[in-house]
Length: 59
Image 1 (cartoon, helix red, strand yellow):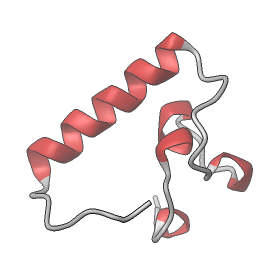
Image 2 (cartoon, helix red, strand yellow):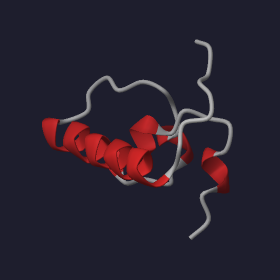
Image 3 (cartoon, one colour):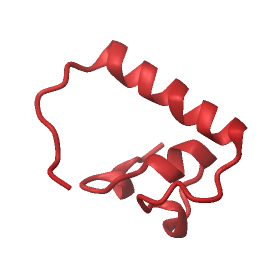
């Protein structure tokens, strides 16, 4: 599976919704269900365990 569409973007919503649709590759978390927020939390834990943080993005 290619995740190139997420490169350089905030993919939080798409990860929460388990979606690769362009309209979901946005930073807004508005309207996500509790289940989707839980899925996003699981992704964050997976990434934190696997990859060291080397920097942050300025908002």
